[in-house]
Image (cartoon, rainbow over all chains, first blue to last red; front, top):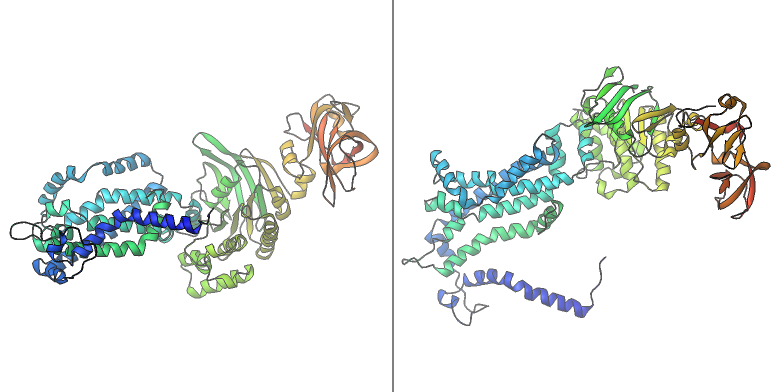
Length: 280
Length: 350
């Protein structure tokens, strides 16, 4: 039941929420404002919350100092392929674990889930040796294949399985009576209904690929092959010190698509996690 | 249209036998209701006919084909589910057209069939809506539309009215019955509601614990139940049962002797159950004394809970009885409507 708050209480609640939001909003605000401040003002004390002078040349320099557009493209296309691949595989695997009865299904699912418990640092060396043997070092293949068949996909499979378990079995039975086979039932009935869960999977897979850091620094060595998180570390001066304002301008550009995607899809994201039984 | 024949159908879930040697003959165009309490196996039988549940043993024929091993889509059946099972992401029109599209029907044929079904079921104005925008009754009609649009040999209904309120259930009952009279398609209808079964079906199959207890026309089941289970299941309020012994003087029960028809005296000395429906008591000064414990006036009739001998029984009278609790009335059972069963309730003795 929804209860109406009194105006005074409402003011207090909103005020409290604003205060609690500061630790979450401030880093983003600091990143964006510092990216347009001259470097001397970034470390001024007391800090300038609202900058009084603006220097947008940092955004130009981001593209001059590195092949940033190429790196942006690298991150984008890798994230899109990883997202599409993970959505496809995790939805099929999740559907199979939820709906197809086969001996050892639960045990196999447990084994798959175990993949979540192994940190990527543990597997990175064997993976490096494997990709070296396949002549895939300094290519984007490891950044595509590792997430699609690795931990992000396992988590996505779990989310999709939980969603499909909750889907009424009668819908599939109706589809069987209507003449559909297993794959068509998945494709035309189950998958369209799984849109909220797919949106959740899409967002966190895109985010995890977009933010991937360890794998690019292990597998990539040429700047034109770099992805954005790796590129951000390259904005340094001749002495190896970070060029803060340019780095923060690059960071702002890096964070932008993620923010846009999340704002557009946040309702479905929350709905998807709610359907899958996970809590935020 | 096609006849459906179940011969010695069995179903095991693990080692548990759920359906035990069920044999039912359903004639072409017949409306058959499978009725029984929860867990009696009626929905399992329907799902086996649909092909949604594998058959462990026995033979299932639809038309002249044995269909045990056929997929649901190859059995020429259409099913209406308890929760409608409409595809939520499709419009009403798309829901109804879906099966035809997947069977390769031409666009013109699909449009014509959907229009025909929508006309029959009064869905013309809702074709572009989604199931979420419809009321329970409208969803039920769409589910029926999806079934009839294919013109299948057999309709299967799995408790289709159980999610509707009492008033709408009566309306939809009439609509389903009307649809059957119009299309004359063989229909198998599962329900736990004996009123639905009695009012809609040409033939009722009463099931209990995976077995067929009796098959017959609705009024035959009411007038001559084969055993105590059927007698108790069919009719509302339920039949009164009194335990006792058949004697030459009548039926000796604790605290009273009830009149018996001549034919039953062949079983003199046997323990038995005396069954009488509430509506087969009448008020008579020469009847047996009964102490009233509750009077429930219904308008058209009066339902009285009373103690006859030592037994609590229910009587339903056309008269507007103004008795009060504790008062004694005199009631007489209708001798032509008595049901005498063996002590174990398995066989009828009269």
